[in-house]
Amino acid sequence: MAEGENMTEARDFYLDDFQPGQRFVSGTFTMTEQAITAFAREYDPQPFHLDAQAAAGTLLEGLAASGWHTAAVTMRLLVDGDMRIAGGLLGAGGEINWPVPTRPGDVLHVESEVLDVRPSRSRPDRGIVTVLSETKTQDGVVVQTLKANMVVPRRR
Amino acid sequence: MAEGENMTEARDFYLDDFQPGQRFVSGTFTMTEQAITAFAREYDPQPFHLDAQAAAGTLLEGLAASGWHTAAVTMRLLVDGDMRIAGGLLGAGGEINWPVPTRPGDVLHVESEVLDVRPSRSRPDRGIVTVLSETKTQDGVVVQTLKANMVVPRRR
Image (tube, rainbow over all chains, first blue to last red; front, side, top):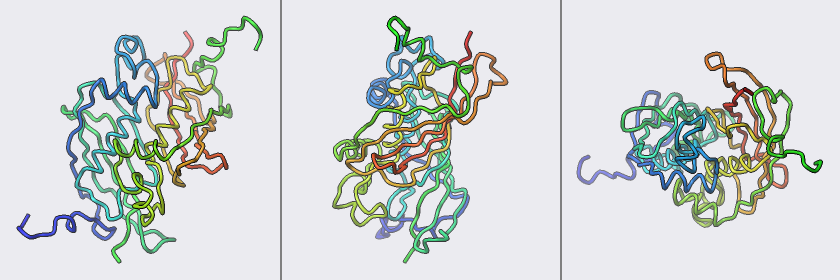
């Protein structure tokens, strides 16, 4: 980045700045056993998210993070990442899948790709950007896919 | 409930116990401003989830919960509810939408309906139950819809 260039301005994306094929890679987050069980106690208190011994004989075959924990961590990685949408990262919804459980010790990052960009029909000041975000471990294993419809303002 | 009836057994659902049209209603959870901002600080630190004043001028027009917070609370209500799946509530994925923001003071509950039941082709010991869960406020406003594919064991 050239000296004097306005980094904040450069990182604020409006609808018109997005195009299919753009890619963003986040930083990393380590899923500790402590974080997994703390989230589970509050939001998803089931044996396979709470206790390694109790988790051994379950469908998950060992302690694993709640899918909603993986989703929340993914959001944090996106918020801290480079896809800085003007007005904030705001999703209207999307499709989420957890092909493989997130395990204690997994170091997660998120790889995102813009799939589609379209102006809103009813609201001329904004549009929808569809982003596919794959949450991966340090070994490249995809633990979550999220195809999200993001609400993005147009440049005024 | 008759004295001596085994409540745990009665509430453990296997694939063969599900059929389209079955409905479940959860208990309630009050979304306080404190809970909304605490979740946001950890997982979704953006102005519209963190601070009422900063949120006023944003797309959300006031403080609102992270969609992932609404999702996590929905999971907690489901786990504490009556849809007790044998082996636990385990989702493979699904579609999520947030038509309206969750606001401080909203008292949420979840209304679920079984949409589809199908055995797994590759795994004879289990199947998939598709459940539509609507998360509603005390006024009946739907703040989240979740169409989830739940992994459910067959009775052995």
